[in-house]
Amino acid sequence: MNFRSRFLGSGRRVPAKSDAAQVAIDPHALRGSPDAISAAVANFLTRTGLFDRDAYVRTYPDIAKSGLDPLHHFVRVGIHGGRQFTSQQTVARLWREVLRAEGQQAPPPPAEPDHPERYRVAIYASSLGNFFMTEIAEVLKAGFEEAGIRVELRDENAVPRRDITHHIVVAPHEFFVLGEGKRWANEEFVSRAILFATEQIQTQWFARSLVFLLRAKAVADMNGQNAAILRKAGIRAAAIQPGYAASFAPFAPQAKLDDSPAFAGLSSAVRDYDTAHDRFASRPLDVLFLGQNAPRREKLLAAYAGKFAGMNNFIYATRAAKPLAAAHNPMASSKVSAALLQRAKILLNLHRDEYTYFEWWRLMQAFWHKSVVVTEPCFPHPVFKPGEHYFEEAPRHIPHLIAWLVRSPDGQTKAEEMRERAFATLVDRATAKDAALLLLRLADAS
Image 1: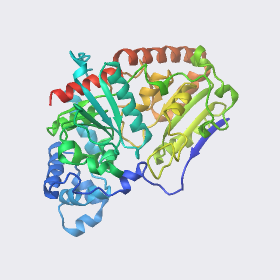
Image 2: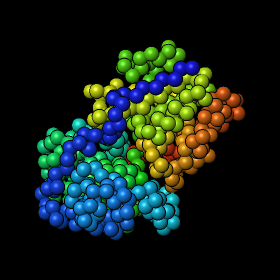
Image 3: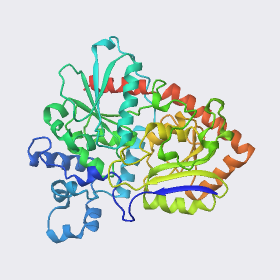
């Protein structure tokens, strides 16, 4: 058995995105009144019902002893300390409400602009944040370029320019709080920007971005349920998911692997795999898992280890004390993840907690590189469906499904059909160009 498992860092559990967590957010970040900012966050949490008072008091007994109103405490103190503010039951109720109210209809394809030359777009991502936020920004940039629109990628060290017609900030919870990003956190800029939110709504990262989302010109969110909850609070928001762009060079087929430490120990069969003659059954890696470490994931992966015996697997679970960046982690590279996906039969997707979030960025990359997705149940997606574009199974049955796909002729045939269908749907109905045009439409409607 070749079971590659790498758990980085100390044994102490730390937040996966801890620079954004460790840097206390300045309540004056938007140079506004702390009272007004706190009131705006409290109003959002009240209108959506996202704040769970009882859960907050149970989790933090000091609140009951203080005699403070739980919501007042959270918006004044708890939000800056990264305290948990909701519960699984509360989020599940909100998701049920939006699913019933809005359904899961895919939006119509966006129209091409009549005069693309009149637009000049700037996309911002923090140079100090997680590498995949810059990756998202780069894919969006490729989408704008394919639409014939002038676009540039900028970071927090850039100089403001007056000729930009559309400002798009990816991952505001990183961009506005790390390093020089704080100088962009002013009312003039935020009120004119489209903020591209990437975080699950129950997390401290989402809560910390609220001060910016509430004052933005508009908000794009990678998750449809999140966008619906934002709209419920009166925010102009839309679900927009960056997708396929043929021009995005880092995701091009890689016939040879470079000398990255991420590939150390891989066999010649993996390193020299001919991506030009690709078939599901011929791919040298059976199972690939890439993600942040979490107790739930660790428990499931440990349970699967014996059942994956005899397979060739690459399991990389990162325990990070700072944003994932190439300077301190060899896996923080678009080319590295692409090369592995191009050699893997199956991408295994496991939720980090009990929330059945549709991990778009991870699944989309698998569709792009024709790696078959096997995942535990996710919330519905308007375009991609279980049993049609990916395999969905209860965690306890996932090893049996994978064994069938990898080892049996019938499973291999089904997997081949699935991955071709997922790729064709991605290219046809979920492109970076469509995402770029939807961002323009969202901004122009504001």
